Length: 159
Image 1: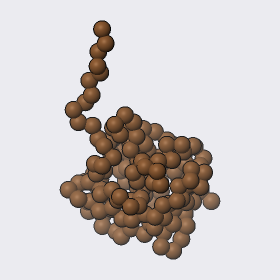
Image 2: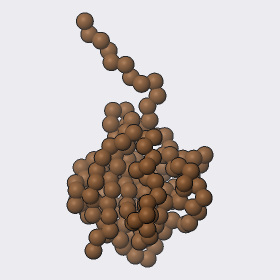
Image 3: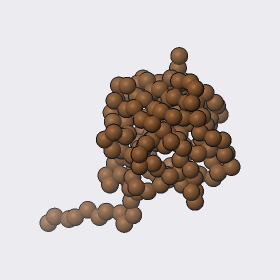
Image 4: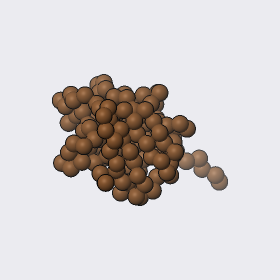
């Protein structure tokens, strides 16, 4: 006898907003990020600020997004950049490897990071995007069956 597996009644989709968490709501600094490039993964995207609306970051349909309240490159803290898992966006992030180089451009300077951690989490695992004491770049996109998970890529500054 064949049994059809049950599918959870509610799974996250890439069209749903990203949880920002309360720790970002009071931090209103202006985003300086304008571009993210991962040469080995053929990713080169414009980046727009992602406002917090009712506790969620808005995801752009035309660019990558820099989470409002997250750090800017060159600052201590977590710089959070995300995009949809579609061709021309962060689709190729699934192929990221440890030690891949990521470039983030602000309005006046380039920053270089090296990927050190890649993992998949559920959307409610917001500690992956939480503020940090040290400078870190967090990239993420949707992943998994029915986009129920988030692919998290952590990178740290390098020369």
